[in-house]
Image (cartoon, rainbow, N blue to C red):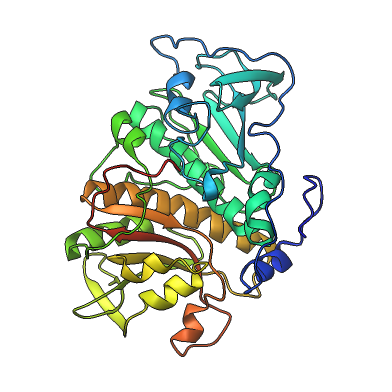
Length: 384
């Protein structure tokens, strides 16, 4: 059984190899508390002044729970377990005084945990880490890649919230260099411009269609299966383009599995506008078997795939690939919704060596993350 201690050093290379195996997780274990036990009393987030970064609105649009169960956060999470914790380093120009704060997404409150370091930039820097036990409790040895994907989704939720609120240009760090924090998102106050972005900061466009609105962000939900109905080529092209732009400079390739009348795998041509077929044949039933046996994927209208992260990747490469995959799929999900598509992220993959299945060298091109797409609109959406 997977060790649940949070302070245990994890061999991420071995953990990913085990997660990709056919081994099944054991019985569920206790998930522990839904929120990290931050010290000190919970504090309300003050109303923002005219020139301040509105932290209350930013966190409501990105990480806050919509009700006490914690299941309805704008950032999706495997099993609705939400392992991502946010520590906020607040500088000048914010609705909170400068300092370090732990965020409680269930109560939408903060806990003052320390002073800011010298040189803290204006705005807020969200340092994202995980309480692994929450996801381990259900997914066991399959949890490690899911924790990274969830963190990428949380970073994307902060990024989109900043864009929707018209803050200064957000800077996203998904370099995979550290485990604590796994990701960093710096959001400046409105009208503030950084002279130089930090190393590996992602200068990213909004999803296809432009800057999202707050209402659009809060409306994003994972559609419950089934997801039948083939997307139009224009919609599929837009979803692929968003994923590729969001993953610029990253260690992943993107493609989409489609069904009849010409089943196969499609990717974007170098011009970024043309869909090209690079493999023929029906891939969706195989994807369904690889995705923890989720049979409904075989009938999905299309499946966007992030592929890469070879078996010999080191821990930094693994973190970077999965963080960026979660980030890109989150933005692609918004694009899918804008094109009238139902969509659902799929994060758990076993024996999903797509390259080997296509006759290429084994252990090079694994499925890292996916977004199932369809044209059906569910009456009720899944609160994940």
